[in-house]
Image (tube, rainbow, N blue to C red; front, side, top):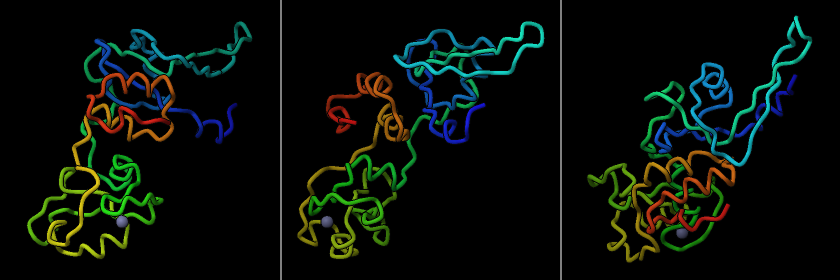
Length: 198
Ligand SMILES: [Zn+2]
């Protein structure tokens, strides 16, 4: 039996479709389900995880299943895949911006950061990837309900919508080196995450 701790530490498995295009993260439980039902077409990861099942009454041997860190699945949309476009959240926003305040450049932990709307919501601004940046509390307060140019505050970077593959990188905080490498090879050159080091 595994301990709860060991189970919690299991990484997520990167699921690709049959053509090799990434589609999302799946838990190892779901990956094992795909393995058992023959839906895994091929394994591409550098890492593999072995799970021990029950003991066979006939042979006395324990069953063993091995899952790769990256798997290509048969079929069109196996259950357990996440939606593709990353939804806006503070966690992903701060990661997109490397926890750097857009105005003063200070790097802060998440609890000291805020989501700043470049065009404030009160003035018709949207809660969208391209209208939001990471800001420290002091800068957010100083800017108030103004545009950056009205407040005389320069911006250190430009907000953008993370691509599907960046979304996959941002969503998994325990990403493995081979999974990171695989996804990074698919990023456009202007992506900030293309040069990201884990
Ligand atoms: Zn700041």
